[in-house]
Structure formats: structure tokens, C-alpha cells
Length: 382
Image (cartoon, rainbow, N blue to C red; front, side, top):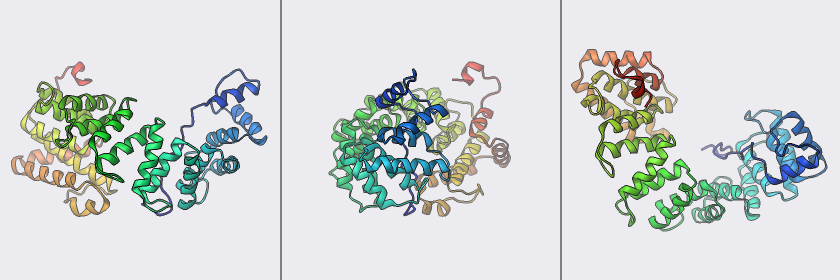
């Protein structure tokens, strides 16, 4: 992580309209109850901001903030946020801290960002409490303090902040700033999962699979992982494929395993690509296709190379990626899969697989090309 910029801090949603927004809109004589970032809306906020309303200054800054870090609108947003922050407007203090942490419209300053997070957190702003927790966890602009980070995560989570609830669940799972407590971890993750957050559902499902969890339950694990999978989370889709392949908590169904693994693989999930490769090699839930099996293993290698900013060279990945923080287990699994297939596949099959990967740079296209030619449209879109 760079010492002065951290893009993991995210800006507040720009489309929400708090109650004050509606009040000021009506006071301005307009019948619409929420602002939609139209030019006239910005002019209305500018008038209210010029009169010194910190809420208007904050809303105007949100409208002005651009995704382009070098945009002049970002600098204007910072100007208005500073005015509101001086009036101890907590949301503005938080947002200003995020912009400073990201170096967006202003020179990055981790210490100042952390100070702003703390000021807004003390005033009860849940977003600021969450970001202060992250700053303390990462040592961004402040000394690393996992125990204090957990305190702020808990405070934000108690206000219903979903990501903070997940952070508390992770802390209790891993013993970060506290003693490991899987019952507490499940309690906090469940709070986030009940808001239908896919990541929380997935993490809660994994927790129920742990044999050291006194509340371990294959059925509960299946429930939450399947919800995350249906929401489109690739990691959950892969895990759901394993449920169907193994027959754990559900009736064993290789076709369902193949379908869910395909959904995850289409999102370039490396483990799903390798799992599909094995299914194609053995013809489990699909037609046997060693060329396709090798092509999917090559695509997994390409995904890892691209994650490291390198073109696929066909050379071993371990030395290239392990130092970059890539998942060493995935790297080793890819290399093992390629060696396994090289021992059983014909040279012509491996050459055809390489050509197929070159011809189909999109994984979705690659997967589609491996479908049987006579497959009906209903199954093709399943």
C-alpha cells in the first residue's frame, strides 16, 4: 500500500437524498422532493451553500465530486466541504477525509484524513466510524491498533452499517483485536446477511462450514451461500457448485454443479475454472472434452497473469506472483492442473486449446464455445 494514497476508501453514494434535501428543495420553490444532479439543482444548492448552510455545502460537494481525480470539480467540492467541516458537520468531515485519503481534488494527507474520520466518528457518523476503524486496522495516517479498530467497527455496526458488521464478524473469526469467538462472529455476520448483503451471506456460510464452530451446520451454510450465489457472487457460486458435486446438504447433482461452476468461471473465478477443467476431463455433468479442460486451465493461468499485470507466457507463475500478494494456493493449483493435463492430453488437444484461448479472449465466449453444438436454447441460457 502506498503511504500517502489509499483508494480503498470510498465516497458516499451520490444519488441519495436526505430529509434536509427535500426540505431545502421545497423552500426553494420547486415541487420535486429530491435533487437529481441537474444544472438547476446545483444552482439551488449553490444559493443555499452561499448562505452558509452546511447541509447544502455537503450536498453541493457530493454533486460536484467527479470520478476523475484531476477534475476541477473535485477541488470545488473540497472547498465546500472545508466550509461545512469547520461548522463540525460530521458527514462533511467524513467525506473530506475520504477525498484527502484518495488524493482527490487535494493533496493526499493520511494523518489529516484519519483526524477527520475521528472527528466525525466521535460525532456518531457511522461511515466515519467504519473508515476510522479501517485506518486503525491498516495503520493509515495513525498507529495500527486492532483493538480500537474493532471498537469503532462495533459502533458503526450497531447503527446498521453493513460493511462494519462484516468487519466485526471477520475480527471475531480471525481474532483481530480480540479473542476468536465464532459465535460472536456469526451473530455479527448474520446482522449484515439479513440485509441481503452477498459478501456477508458468503462469509456467514463459510463460518457454518468450520468444524471448530459450535454452531456448525451444513444446512445453514448451504442456505447462506446459495443466497450469495444467486445474488451473483462468484466465490459463492463456486462453493455452491461444490455443494452439489459432493452432495453435502443437498441431493448430489453433477449437472447443477457444472451449471454453478460455469457461472463462477464466467466471472474469471480461478478455482471455478480449475473445477470445470476437471469436470470436462472426466465428463462429469458435461460431455468429456480434454481440449476444453486444458483450455480452461490455460485461462486460469491467464487470469492470474493479468491480475499481476503480465501477459500470459505459459511459464510457471509462482515466482512471478507470490511476491505480489497473489493467492499462492491458486498459483500452485493452476500449475498442478496444467501438469496433470499435460500427462494425459494429446499434443493436438493442447495445441487446439491454446488456439481456442487466443480466439476467445472473453471467458464467457470460451465457455460458450465448449457447449455441445446441439444444446437447446433453454439450457444454454440457464
